[in-house]
Structure formats: C-alpha cells, structure tokens
Image (tube, rainbow, N blue to C red):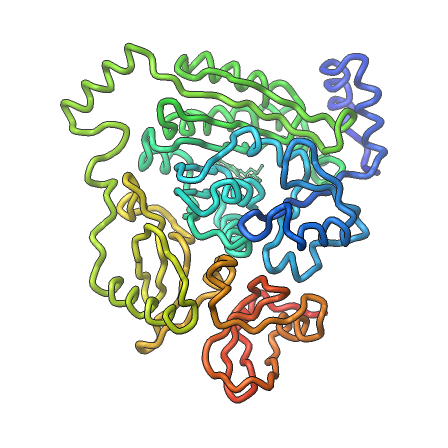
Length: 465
Ligand SMILES: C[S@@+](CC[C@H](N)C(=O)[O-])C[C@H]1O[C@@H](n2cnc3c(N)ncnc32)[C@H](O)[C@@H]1O
C-alpha cells in the first residue's frame, strides 16, 4: 500500500504500456506489499522437520516460481528470529526470486553476480551451487559490498569471493570466463514503490533514461565475461520498456552473438509479487568467431582465459604453515571438516580458503578490491589458531555431527544470552573451542573452561532483546 501520490507522468506511461490492464495495475497500489523468505538449501532441505516447522510457525505459503521461496505474513516477523541469525533463510521480495530460478546455476559452475548487494540473488545462486564451483559476488559500492559480504557469511557460503569492483575492471580480469552471469541491474525501481516511498520521490522520466543508459554501460562488460555457450540473466525491478525490452533489443543489436532465450515479467496485479523483469540470453559462438578465436589462441597462447595467470598462485610458506595450524585445530574440534579444492591465502594473520578451480586462482584477484577471498576460517594469534565466525556458520550437518558443539534450544533464554554476548554456563567438564548450535544449527563460537562458555559471538552482531 502506498500513501505517497504517484507522479502523473508515471501514471500516463503505465496507461500507455498496459492499456486496459492499467486500472487493475494502479489499484494494486492500494493493497499491502508482498513479503517473502527463501529457505537456505545449504542448511535445510524442504523435507527436513525444521522446514515444516518454519512453514507452520511463520504461516508460509509457496512462491510458485521458486522452489525454496515462501510468502510470509508481516505479523510473523521472521527477520527477528534466531533462525534468521543462523542463516536458515533469507528475507527476499518474492518476485525477485524469479531471476536466479531462470538462470538455474548448478554445482561446479563458475558464476558471477555482477551487481550483488545486499545479496538476495548471490545467496540464492550459492544455494543452487551446493558449495561446489566458484561464485564471484560483486558490488560496486563499498558500503553495500560490506552488507553483501555479511549476508554471504550469515548464509554459510564457503565457495564465494566477494569483490567491490566496477564492471569494466572485473571484465579485464575475467574475459570469457563465467558459465553464468546474473546482472540484476541498478534501475528506476518502479516495482519498489509499495515498499519504499523514496523510490517514488526519485522517479522521473529523466531518471528512467539515465538508468537505461547505465544499464547499456554495464551490459557489454557482462557479455565480455561470459563464456561462449554461457548464460546471462538480466533483471530489473522496474516496469518501463526502456530499461527492459528496449535495453535487451539494443544489446541484441550490438552483440549478434547474444541470443534471447526468453523473457518473463511478474506484475503486481496479476501475481503475488512487487514486480520483476527477467531476460535470459545465451552467448553463441559463430563460425567466424570460432576461427578468429583459434587464431588468437595460436598467436598469443591464450584462449578463453589467461594461461598461467589462471593457475592458482604458488602457495607461500606462511599460508601453508597457517593451513597446517588450521588442520591441527580441525583434528580436535571439527574432525570431519572437509575443505575441498582450495588455495590457502594469508592476509596479515587472517587465513582464507579461496575456492580454486582449473581456471581460477588468487592471481586473478590481484589489484581488485576483495572483501572476502573465499571462506575466512580464522586468525593466527601468536601461533594459536582462533576460528572465525564465518567458519562456524559454514559448517555442514555432516561436519557438525562429530564436531565439538554446545547445543541449545532456539527459543531458550540461553540463546538470547548468547546473542547478547553473555557467557553460558554448563555442568560439562570439557575445555576448549566449542560451536554453539541452536537446534543443531551453528550460531557462533564459544570457549569452554570449567563449566563456563566464554562468548565469542562477534561484537558487531550482538543483539539486545
Ligand atoms: C537491484 S540492486 C542489486 C540487488 C541484488 N542483486 C540482490 O538481489 O540483493 C543493483 C545494484 O547495482 C549497484 N550498482 C549501481 N551502479 C552500478 C554500476 N554502475 N555498475 C554496477 N553496479 C552498480 C547498486 O549499488 C545496487 O547494489
């Protein structure tokens, strides 16, 4: 529901666009906005009892176009629940869930989310990838990139690199590199009017033109980073043709190798959602381009990449030592920890495990602003290893099964105390690092000694109740 009047020019344009449907569309502004959440498949499956419990507790109803998406009723406030803190789900406007469902990323692929903050689509992509392959989640604005990085951490994503780069800078590093690219473009946000009255105040025909020009600025970089045969999903949360169909027409005109596979629109007067546009495109290799590509390969020794630069940089001795310390820590605390194919990276005393593939290593990140070069596993402190919050949240059910945990109930006083940053008390006699879990899901670290668990929940995340 919006109480702020819509700009007359906007109303006129929507009448032109929708014809006899315009009345129903304009009436939708008198209805409440739709709210949604997406379950995190890295933590819970649809069949698990906890999913069924969430469905009952928050009165969830399925979103038709996204198997993990649900509508919730505002009064249930799932964003306040400790399960949200534990990354069991992500709050996301339902129609925004359609774009990744159409792109359909898969485990093992190299995927880029080019305009990623605050992380709705990146976290959805990571759920589809099941921890396998490489996800680069990028956001140009540093403050927003930080939020993206925090959401990647909360959702327990281990195979993501979070960068904050302009699309053209990224394109220089990753020519024809990604299997799939999501470009959820900055737009005039006409689908945000019920949620955010500021979007109404910002709207003007000039703003629409400016957004369309910016989209045409970013799209060539997305095309350049896509492998031949790769897929690009372009989406906006706006209704006008300039930023949607016309932008795609212009793209197809400029890049004949791009083929439009389908477009989809969600309208607030037709579906339960605030509105979204998605176009799915494929980059094809023509016979001519195939020949010229081969030529380039023969003369410069490069094809779809940068030869040696794509190989992981040689692990330096300090990183290898740090990895050893981490492995010794795991033997005691998380004996079944499995790190997959990674390159250890040490930034100061901070150890990260960068997802490493045949074609990707740390060399490609040189000179880029990187907020999270893979999973942050911990810090070396005078030859002691201190585990990171990100590590706790990224642990899988299998790893937790044999790990040192302290289990509390999500609805207990202890959970509130832990999230406030207080110590917990136990009659156990063990000592050392322990993962505090709520109903079996990791919430953070504690350090146990003589019946007391010292709180290691990050200070910046602590809550008041
Ligand atoms: C629609 S939002 C992305 C929402 C995100 N995909 C999600 O699902 O949570 C568009 C993003 O593009 C970013 N952006 C703005 N100007 C940009 C530019 N010139 N190049 C790339 N991204 C830009 C904005 O900061 C914003 O975070």
